[in-house]
Image (cartoon, rainbow, N blue to C red):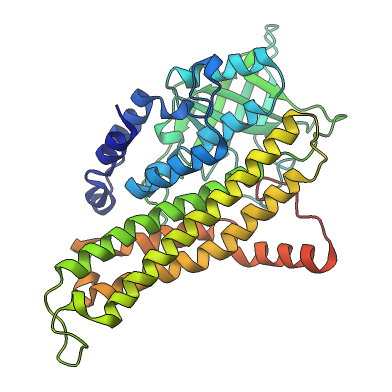
Length: 392
């Protein structure tokens, strides 16, 4: 199936799914069938071998079709990025073969508790030896913000060993002891399955568990920048969608005001200005995101060449953070301007136009923009290094 046709099919019924809270299982099935999840997998391993920029161009188009679907696969593509950064051909083949076959990965990382966001040492989830003599492990814990896991084939769960060493495991979602709850109650991105995942004595084979080496601190990697830019790119796709809705609204609108500047709304310079602003914001947002994606490509190239300390990874984090600070502001403005172009009738619940603002506001609320701006200011003024975690 051609990509344009794929996205057109995903876009069908998007407004109704949002309004009726119909989970997009069929749309994720289309992604499996198309093997879009293998876009970054090397050609030699059965994927498309796309660059990060090419992936983000595709992501923006996917988010334009359905912002929920775009966020659902965020953890999947982040997992692929992590695997690609490990310079071990056998390791890559082990974990990317299922991706090349169409499988989707979800996540079980974050916990609701006392630890700060970004603290992956203080997790309460335990990944402990089973004691059965087979080298296997048992996983016990509860996760939240498990975006995408509801729709996934496998889930990547993070925890710690009994000794407190960070560890992770990748297990099938349908394995005994795994329970995925669709209890996300956010007012935006309602269909992403960003809810609870429980692990109760879940068995993991030795080759499904990844243990950290406490004596070997890895260099800064561009995965954090990738994760953050994914959210911003999803916003970019949402703005493209609302831009198209603004154009349709103004073209079809027949009722203006006696004190307006033209008889037909589509000829009113004030309303045309609003749509022109939205169109300009959409272009600027996309250009900003793709520029940051190119910075991640450069960082990946340096890491692959053994130059992880070149500064390219930090530069990619900076670009992703700068993109968020700018894009969040422009996108929320555009989502409000949509109602300037549409008038009071655009606020009808049946029109569903509020979903764009709600979705953008929800995406922008991940990792607060003011904290990003503060960190950037500290870097620019004082030369402070940006935080090194998955939030940067």
